[in-house]
Image (cartoon, rainbow, N blue to C red):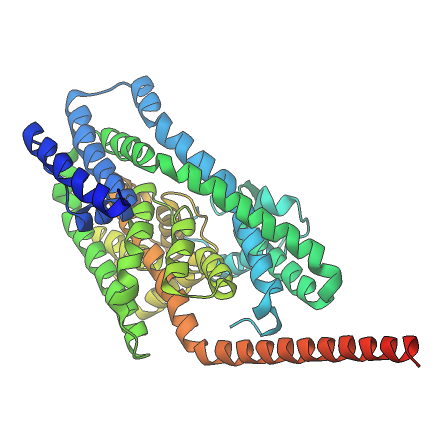
Length: 460
């Protein structure tokens, strides 16, 4: 009996047994849909379950010890992901600069001195960009203590420089970028160094993919604990509903601008949008766009973006591109100022825009970092920042909206770079192919000439 006859004979029996048992088999298309999108579906279910259970726990009430252990699974989940983020970014940036595309150029005091605070912010930015210790850059970052100003002999307000615990991601990016350029310039001597980081990137990516399998469970407990920590939801939603709506409209406007940025290149912006859903929901659930980087890498590979571009642009955008956070910080400053009936003139508005632009390039990739930046900016323009604590009551939602939109922004930024550089990439690939063909022809000629010389020598 052939395999075809056997399958035709067995299939009716299987179908009849399923019919007798009452089970209805899923069509192949539905099976494929659930298999391909299981991560997104389970993550959404984790968010929904977390919201429902969180509201129930918030109504019942939970002591501090219970809240601590309720948040523990989500905390552990974030910690194991953060464990792999640093080596993944460093390895990918070095590989991106050391690969085939490496030869191309890289596509406190409410009445203090406002201008002085701006200069200190820029000082922190440059100190973090150019670190003095290759090991310390992974552990510490430079900052300024605006809460405890001092004075000098001329009675001028000064702010002391402090060292904060935490990875200096801008410094890591700069060091990795420089080492990648040096690896590419050293050519054959740099191959062992490049191969090491290629292997490191693959190993860390595999490790992070295994960790991401626990996303639905970790997300469920993170959302559950964040909802349970809000003591009274009724006045929170009543007083800050318009502000949440403002933030939501701002994020939607930003998303439409992302679509427009790709559409102007005569590229269908919705083609990449369906690939952005897993990174978006992962960033939304974990409040961190960095955690969604592996999914962004996979989406770019599926879209057809060369790894030389995606492995360089995505870490760069993840470190220095937080336009969704900039929208939130600007709107929050205006909201707090209006809440206190403080009129903002053109000068203060300009300072808010400049400081926000500077802050988002060096914003720590931690939850609620935008609220801290908003408090600092309010202090620098002379607005009382005590009311900014209201922002924390709905931060569990705003932080997720920002993180998800930032992940979308990274994806569209990478797609935009790819389509702008598509012609140059094709030209470089053709040149590389021509070089390889010429090298192969020369090797064949040398081999043929050697054989002829040996034959003439053996048979004079």
